Image (cartoon, rainbow, N blue to C red; front, side, top):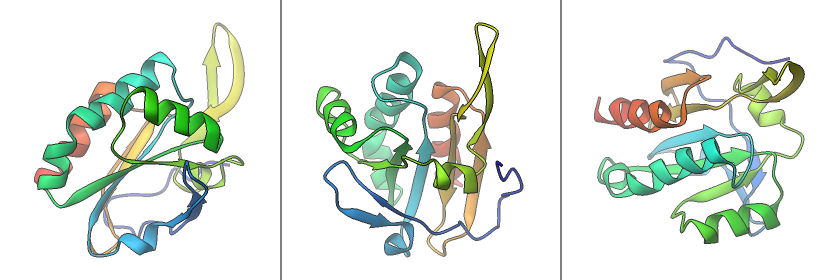
Amino acid sequence: MANLLLKVGDLAPDFSLPDETGQVVRLSDYRGKRVIVFFYPRDDTAGCTRQACGFRDSYADIEAQGALVLGVSPDNEVSHRKFKEKFSLPFTLLVDLDHAVAERYGAWGEKQNYGRKYMGIIRSHVVVGEDGRLLDVQIQVSPEDSVARALSALAG
């Protein structure tokens, strides 16, 4: 069940997930930095590519704001490596195979495509402040709005 109750000011739920190389990444390792965590359904699909490449294209601005980006999807390490290489993504992609982290962030729920209902990742992002508190929470956001809103949250 999705947790849709996360809101600005809440402590971001900590997590540990493997990245595209198998290294375990913990959100708490980034205390003292701001972190954009974006949730996307699938590597190398149209909307997900637009979202990821939007963060890539804005990465200099994101770093200038003292922040970094973590992308999260249920895809495996091999898929993430291919996606990252194909589009020269400068940030870490995390493997959430069982979608447990997405669920804790409210980014997992019922979707509908061509009349078929199913459970899946709801395109979303959060911006985590240096203190581990949420500065921005956007659930069910378009690829373009995700990037623009995250940048706006960083700018304050």
